[in-house]
Image (cartoon, rainbow, N blue to C red; front, side, top):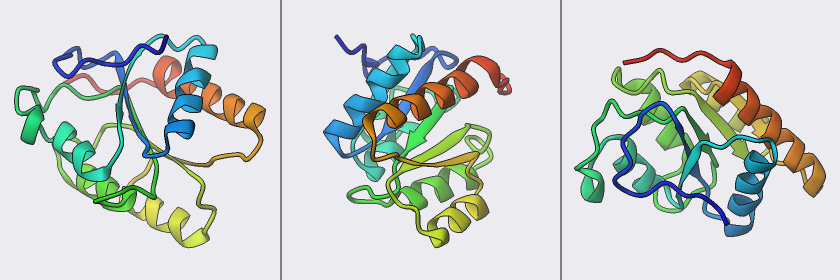
Amino acid sequence: MIDLLPDQYTDQSVFILLVEDNPADAELAIRALRRGRISNQIKLLQDGAEALDFVFCRGKYTSRQINDHPKMILLDLKLPKISGLEVLQQIKSDPRTQTIPIVVLTSSSHESDVIESYKLGVNSYIVKPVDCEQFYKSVEQLGFYWVLINRSPNF
């Protein structure tokens, strides 16, 4: 069973925010994290507007505290409502949220998307491998690094 983060969860240091509209890719990413022994809780959101509402504590997430940052955000670029690039731009341009590590995990290998993501402050850009086993390995490795090895500031 996939352990997803409840809406009222508030421990800022132990959860991963996964923003992915494709259910199959979301399930693969979650399984890869679990397979890599990343036991952190995961909050799955399926569009850019809800991701921004969650991070900035708006709409149905007004009960959250803005300082309850995810340990990392895995962000697809091709999202409904608001694009992943716009989500990235808004998070990285706000002093309250700009230190949250964001890893773009997308099917786009367009150089323009890579360049724009880095200009906006992404911490890492990973193209989803077509091969399922390679996808698992990529997500396991990024989860291990960003969740277990990397040190983020505590606010």
